[in-house]
Length: 245
Length: 224
Image (cartoon, rainbow over all chains, first blue to last red; front, side, top):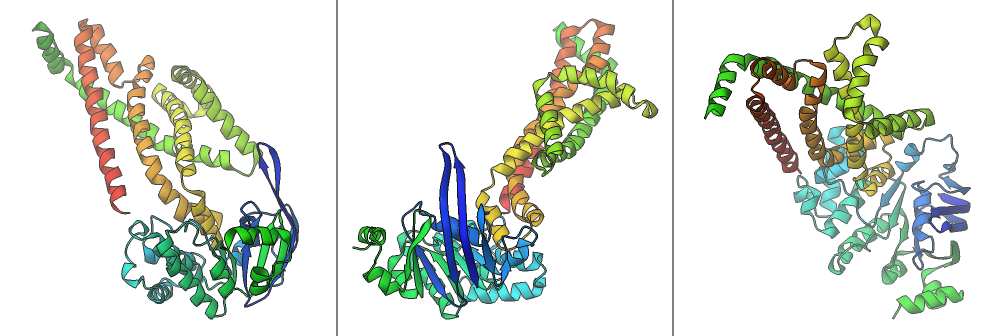
């Protein structure tokens, strides 16, 4: 479903160029749940953000459902409609009601009529238990509720893949569970998911595959139990020894 | 006591010069400047954000030059240059000066737009784009509605500045309140009394404007 070939990305900083991705090759199959773990600065988020071109890679190719989206002549907006994204800081729209947060994109992109979008938004809100908040504004919501809203906002576009960029890192500890439950429910429906996370227990439970990224490359990849219990790469071992206790 | 008597005398004798001719011309000039200032400001903002380097260059240099030179000088340039540049249009001094005021305020307004739009969290744009909205849709539906709340207070300040800055246009005798002052002072030689009246007029105008803008801001705050 998503294939990347030799992705490179660097950022200009005041100390010169920072080479964040140094040739990432990866293939994510339909229905797969892939978690990306690793130390900060290792390129996890940059890699994820390259997948829907929020970051434009310097070189390399990205194929999504058979189309090369790194091609300059394609309309990326069409493809982004099929890739939902959830952010660390939620990024819900504060000037729109909960319901309008969800209906905006389907209506604006011409995917749904207003009435269809409202009907769908209400059923999505019911699914995450926020239906009675539909006319509230996001500032009345807790962090966990905002992130659940952000997830269904992305789902309203009926994407083929969901990208999660540290979805629980900005949450108070007692709200992490409710967000992870929504993601788990989503995984059960067979949605293809790519999840950058620091929740080791969670990613071991839901993932088909775990990628360990460090130094701008995928240093190790494998089934959750292989990575968690028998890591081969010394850097993976070192990282896991610090986060698992 | 003669001071107050004199003021009263001026008001009864020359009231129409101050309160009708003066105030109406000041308000007309301010409204024109605000209106076109916002339009020019938006145009300059988008020119400076444009993909085309020529447009960016024009936008940046216009703003740079206008912000870097005194307004009175710009009014002189407008007064003498506009009739030369638009001879077929045959602009009155009032129009020439108004054009200079509009360009001046447009530059400051474009800065206000820039800072207000930049203050919107970039995450908002990313979220909108990740949903498949185009950059235009994102600007219209996500960024601008949030930027308005940052822009409006600063824009209100700019409006108040404009009302006061129109007094500079009196250099060209175009009939606003400060021109009224010059006329009446010339006939009565009551300098300080005339200045008092002018001060009160400007204060009342800007005070009303402040209150009206405050009302707008509160209404915007109320619906989110």
